[in-house]
Amino acid sequence: MKRFEEMNREELLVVYQQAQADYSAACSQGLKLDMSRGKPGIEQLALSDELLKLPALDQCNVDGIEARNYGVLAGLPSCRKLFAQLLGVQPDEVFVGGNASLTVMYDIIAKAFTHGLLHSNTPWSRLDKVKFICPVPGYDRHFAICESFGMEMITAPMLLDGPDMDKVEELIKDPSVKGMWCVPKFSNPDGMTYSEAVIRRIAKMKPAAPDFLLMWDNAYCVHEFDAQYEPIPDILGLCREYGNPDMAVEFASTSKITLPGAGVSCFACSLDNMAYFSKLIGAQSISYDKVNQLRHVLFLKDKEYTLAHMEKHAAILKPRFDIVLSKLDEQVEPLGIAHYFRPRGGYFVSLYAMPGTAKRVHALMKNAGVVMTGAGATYPHGNDPQDSNLRIAPSFPSLDELAKAMDVLCVCLRLAAAEKTLGK
Image (cartoon, rainbow, N blue to C red; front, side):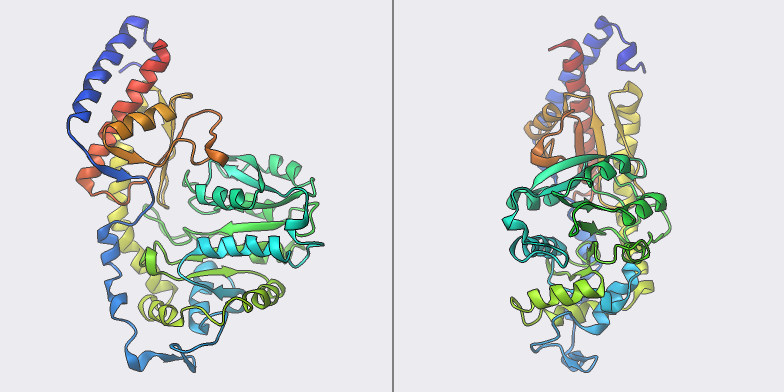
C-alpha cells in the first residue's frame, strides 16, 4: 500500500472514489454509536456493584466517627489514608471532597478569584489580567474552567516526556501568569506520562507570580491497562525539596475506579495550604458525604486491593484499545495520513489526522452516526491551529460497536485526506 505522498493524481483519485463508496456504505448502516467521552462501560460499572450494598448499619461508626452525622470537614481519616497511599503523599496532606474532582478543581480556582491564594497579594478577581498555561493538546474541562473565569489561556506544546519546559520557563517570567494545568500520568488526550526529569523541572520552577498555582490533575494515577503499575514522583515532596512547598495542589478521584456518578474526590497540598483552604471551605460546608467515603474505604480497602481492582478494569479496557490501534495500524498508518500515540494507560487515543482535516473528519463521522469529541476540543476555545487532533474514547461502546465505529473513522480519515490532497 502506497503512502499518499507517493501517489500520483490518478492513484489518489482511485483512493478518493473508493473512500466515497465505502463512506456511502457506512452511512447506509444507520449507526448510532457514541465514543465522545471517557465514560466507563457497563462491564466496568458492574465491577463496583458491591458498593451499592455498603455500608451496613453496624459499619457506620469508623475511626471513632459516626459517618452519618455532621462534622470532619477534611474527610474520614481512613479515606484520607487510602488516597494518600494511591498518591504517595501523607494522610494529613489530603482533603476528601464530594463525588467529582472537577468540582474541587473549579472550587480551588474560584477561591483564588474570590479570596486569593495563600501567597496572593490580592484576590485574582481584582487583577487586570490572569493568565494560565495550558499544555496542548489537553483536557477540555480544564479549559472550560479557565473560560468561566475569563482567564487568558497560553498554550505550551506537549512533547513525548511532558510539556515543553523551555516554553513554560519563559512564560512564568510574566507575573500575570498565575498557574498551569498538568495531567502528569497518561495525559488527556495523548496518554503520555511525564518523565521524572520533567516533573523535577516543574517542581523547581521559580515563577514571577508569588501565588503561582500548579494544578496537578492526577486523574489516572492507577489506570494502567497495558503495563505494570508504576507510580510517578510525589509532586508535593519535590516542590518542598525545591523551595516551593505551597505551589502545587494535586487532584484525584475514584470516578474511573468505582462509579463515576457516585465516586469520591480529593485534593492534596501542603499543610499550610490545607489550613488555608480548610478555613475557606469551612464557610461553605460542614462536611462532605462521609457515608460515601466509608463505602469506598470498605470496598477498596487499601492500595494493594485497589490495584487488583484496577487489573479487572484493565482486562476490559485493553481489548478496546487493541481494536482502536489495530484498525489504525491496518487501514490508516500505511497511507501516511495520520499519526497517533500508543498509550499504556488512561482512557484515550490521541489521533493526529492530516492537518486541515479534523473538523471534516468529525462532520463525516457525525453524518455516519458516530459521535466523537468535537474536533479542536483538546485546545483552548476549541481552536486547534493545525485542525488535526481528534480524541478517541474507546471505553463506552461494546467491542462490536467499537470495531464498527473505527472502521467508519478509518474511512472518514481516508476520504478527508483524499479531498484535501486533491483540492476537492
